[in-house]
Length: 339
Image (tube, rainbow, N blue to C red; front, side):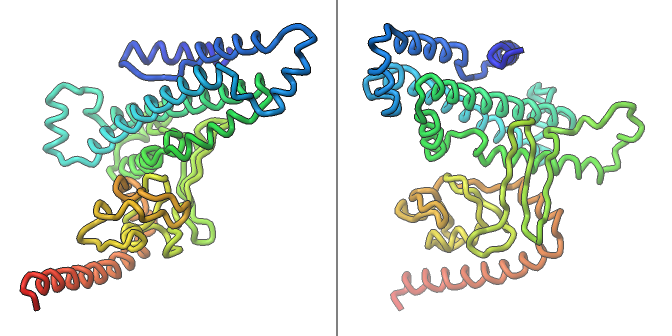
């Protein structure tokens, strides 16, 4: 089955369950076909068109300027926005107190009542992210093929900078950690999975794992034969495994205290008080601290996976936080009393 048909069938089924945004794959292909017909013409125009193609899709191409890229950009924003919002709701429910969970279940959301309900919800989100990522990649390749250009790749680079690339979403990293945490929770709870005649159903991903190569942590996952996500969990500031991890809006992951240090703020005020001029230590993009996301599921995963390191680092950071708190309140008292 061709991917276009597979994608349309998938989205049709999903839209029957809930109103999901998606990539207008079929519509964008028709736009590109129309563009190809406009580029095809008598032999007298072939040399002229070739010269235009060599310029990487001329500015006069109405498809590029007016239809294709603006439409795709809007659809990508909708897809990533929906994915992030629903992944956040799912993970907040997983980490919520028993009272909050009871309230959610009382409201009638029966799908999320059980361990398996959370698993299925997460699996649906992962499948949604994967198939839309593949759709976007294929339509951009189609664009470059028709126009004999690299505009599609340049557009992909642009959306990565705009942080609307779904495979770069920190919520996907959280779902990967969520998957491993659920497996570990299932083992620790001693649930009777052995008695089941079916294979384990708690799998959001195939081949998702946290590995330590020469002490360096790597969270990796093969979403499909052609899509693999690798996330380096080494803080580029302290050069150690991230502790109390936080993802900046540019996508880079740091220890919380390291990020505070890089943003020139103390842990009492927090990253929300960082100046917009403060830049990410890696990509040098500014304004990335205010919308930073605490990676709670990843924090739980790393705490389980490297207990000795975690305990040692916790003691060190506790002492440092107490020192910063003391200095902070000493300064506030001096400012108030004028001494």
